[in-house]
Length: 214
Ligand SMILES: Nc1ncnc2c1ncn2[C@@H]1O[C@H](COP(=O)(O)OP(=O)(O)OP(=O)(O)O)[C@@H](O)[C@H]1O
Ligand SMILES: [Mg+2]
Image (cartoon, rainbow, N blue to C red; front, side):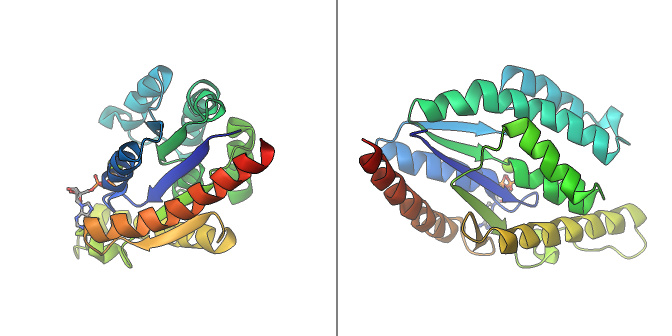
């Protein structure tokens, strides 16, 4: 595999898509052949699955049902979009990937963590990103969705988000070489600089690896 695979993770509204786009622009300016993609919804089939997943009329789906839909999206996406791009030597930037499943369906939704990892392995054939940027706001209160006393749904929402954040941080502790935590409380431009620093490290290493193989 000659390409480079980079993913973005974090809670909703931490600026993933903003940084994904800024990095895409930066790399294209440097003449890298970049593929911008996302999960769920990075393929034609995935876009249909994403519609089902996000349809407000289908709320009440349990974490395992959600996970199976996400795995169908992921398996197809890896096979038909990510792998071909990596084999063609492209830089693949993916907005959300395997860590979202462990954080959201596992830590957030209570699905067995080992099962989440096994599902991820089945869906991806073990394909891991060289780098995962985890955007973290420092606390969920910094997301502008703080607890409102008396509002059960909002409060439950915050408990869920707290578990997801803890899950992400646990993942980062378990995979410090792959997952790099960047403070999302900085301005978008400052976050971008920190992202570029991490990415340049990985791209330098990839070029070196390519040189050795050839
Ligand atoms: N570092 C930042 N500081 C303040 N606001 C930001 C920052 N980065 C992005 N934003 C703003 O926050 C909002 C959410 O950003 P963005 O859509 O990039 O987040 P996201 O993590 O992709 O969210 P989602 O999970 O909903 O897709 C946008 O209005 C964006 O302009
Ligand atoms: Mg987004």
